[in-house]
Image (cartoon, rainbow, N blue to C red):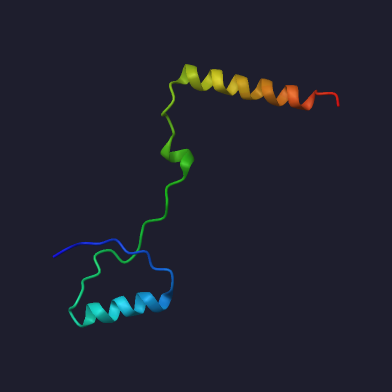
Length: 71
């Protein structure tokens, strides 16, 4: 037996897979994918705090320079 990952783009395709499963031709292992994790939670705590503080200071400085520019 071989396991493959299939992306379903249409509800009709999902119904076909269910029919194939009813005929014992295939077995659907996972019917839905968990909602994707937020990037803020995924990467929370990944940067050391000193690097994060330095980056935040740089972003703040850049925003101030952008706001105070004279064109």
